[in-house]
Image 1 (tube, rainbow, N blue to C red):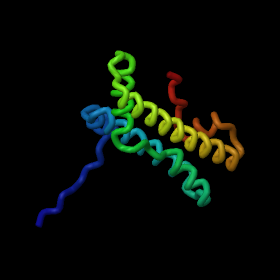
Image 2 (cartoon, rainbow, N blue to C red):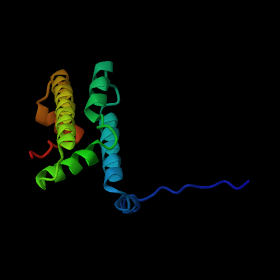
Image 3 (tube, one colour):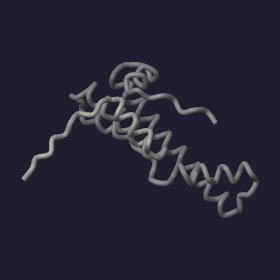
Image 4 (cartoon, helix red, strand yellow):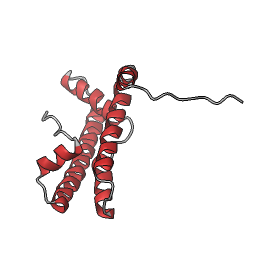
Amino acid sequence: MATAVRQRQTPQEIFAAIEQLEPGEAEEIAHRVLQMQAHRKAPHLSLREAELLEEIYREKRSGFQARFNELNAKRRDFTLVPDEHSELLQLNDESEAFTLRRLEALAELALLRRVTLSALMKQLGLKAPPVV
């Protein structure tokens, strides 16, 4: 039986492969890389820190962003029907709750580490979401 030898890929090869992905898949890769960096920078976490990092890096449910964007586009085009408007409001509430949980976890982790929120976000490689 032949043994396959896997060669280590160069960063350029990895980036070339990522460029071939759909935007959502590339986003998932970026998220996982940030998560990996955080764990490498702080391998000896307390249980609470690990829980907070899990909450910070939690992703929105599958399909959420695509549907949210679709309904927002229809809202901007004034083609949103009442049922879709209700759904958009529900998605907006869900997004706000998600963001609030994430911010609370970030604030608690910053307190535990005795750093500012902006310093923590820099440590974790996170950027504030754009204001829309």
